[in-house]
Length: 401
Image 1 (tube, rainbow, N blue to C red):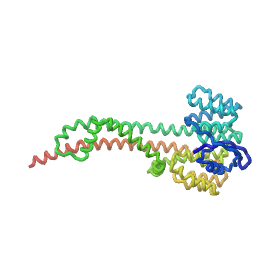
Image 2: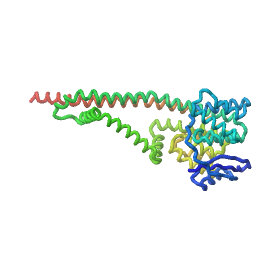
Image 3: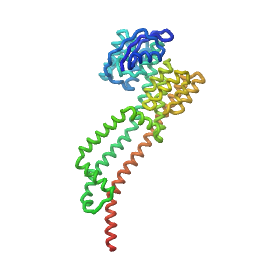
Image 4: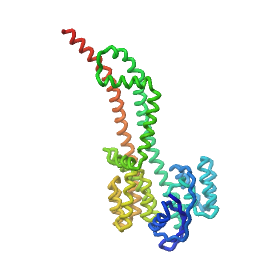
């Protein structure tokens, strides 16, 4: 994929500048045609260096600081200078802001300067900034994006915070199993060795115990290797597609995940559409924020439907993985002519519902993991008791003969 920098005119006659990633020159022209841009000049840009991505919290702080300063009448250059000199910034974050300031001082627009920073700023923020430059309301858009990324940060924090207890339980399961197989089970090895035959469950746990006791380094390395292999397999596009499709169809959890995916998309689409971004471009950007490859893969068909004149609600309704409430609200917005207001409303509603969904998922995971631990311990206990019980039965039977 190459990066092409361009200067073009819109259908309304406005001159715009930017950059697009495309496989070749034909792909570059095709993507500009999709946005109804007419090329004036273009050049192939040099490959950008990989730069660290700014986290949602950092993006929220940047947008809020910038929006507050611009609303107070501070010039863009001075505002960026103030933001880049904040004491709490990390060094790599400060470097990104200083590069941004230097680029703007050279006469580039803020959106082009953001895009030149590689992966530091998400495409959503770049397009929103570009739209605000054309409309002259950069302070309002910056504050809106600050609110957007604050919600994103809160949602991510809730997910991470909610997963702490299940992770602790998972760690305890591993510790308990390791303790049982390396310290408890070996205490019974001498007794089991004197028995003529052992039940299959006992043979299984004795074999595992011997292996973990004598080859624990190999077991750890094997576990690490298995995790790496699974991660590599899940990075294969077809496997990732299957995995993400399975997520949406899981009992109970699948429904909760759908709410979270829909909330992410609705919030992004609301921000883009309300800022005047064309709906096709908004869909192209919004699909990348869903976080599910299976849902994202269905957007090409939905975008083609919108381009051919079909309603947005019908296009979204055909995407498997979103809750029906999104389609219904979009349809109401189309019928009443208040699509931006309905998108705002459904985004807020789904944000709230996604928080509830996270709590439900955690409340579901906790008993599942406790039951899993109980099953493992129960299996071990049965495996230990069963041969002892059988030996008593054999002694009692021989006494009667």
